[in-house]
Image 1 (cartoon, one colour):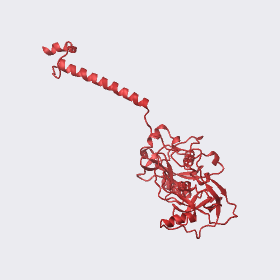
Image 2 (cartoon, one colour):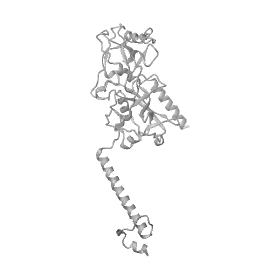
Image 3 (cartoon, rainbow, N blue to C red):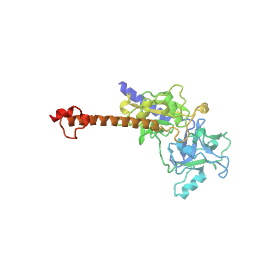
Image 4 (tube, rainbow, N blue to C red):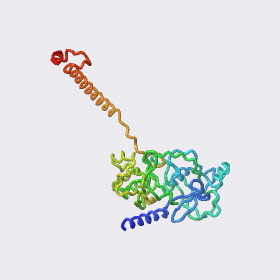
Length: 352
């Protein structure tokens, strides 16, 4: 009975996560695609378009990679991200013989202007649109000729060891869903053992958000891959990389499936949010591999020490082998080698 109640509770919690709308969440509209469309942002409790006050020739269109990353369409090096006004993006689509963005029937609300995303202190572009510079709309302008759009197509996905993502395959929200980490050659879950609110906050910061609104456990399916166990972060942890919370032991464990160590047999789902009040104090690594788990390479000093140990071990073994052969040759008359002067009295006995 308790197990059934727990399953129902977990399902309801996951449903609540998937239905939540988060400040700063984004979507692409006009083509029913998560890769191409007009950019819309959920801001101040409402969805609305993002527009530019200036025209194409004067506007900066540096927001494309940030938008694609936030939509989980960007994991590494990109071959093509097209950003601009709806009309300029539609021209690219038309030239490629693809269906154009249809803005008819979309919301007339505009929530921000002049979105510009530039590299942060750690060198990477912002991972979240609210970490970019923009002008909030006062509701007075209704002109949509400079509404912004983006193409997140032809992405070369090269995730790195230690990269996290939110897998919301069953949800329209990109800020909530199953928390996954990349290790080996594919993505896997994170065990709920030891996972707490601090770890959830750290995971969300790594994704560009400020904190986790909530996190829940979900029962792991049979055969699920769990890369990470006991991901506990300290109460005062301000890290923006989840692997910084791991012990040395767990840093090694991340390279193999640790499902058998997951005592609660459940993985983590999170609901990340962007809180503008704490954004200045909540650091983010930016787009790039700043949170990559470093490869554990041996230093030259360690290599030299290992070589010396091996040579000493080899000399000892050869010496023991030589003594054994001498005894067999001299004392037991095994004529594998001639008796030498070093055989001592053994040769006398063997000659009798």
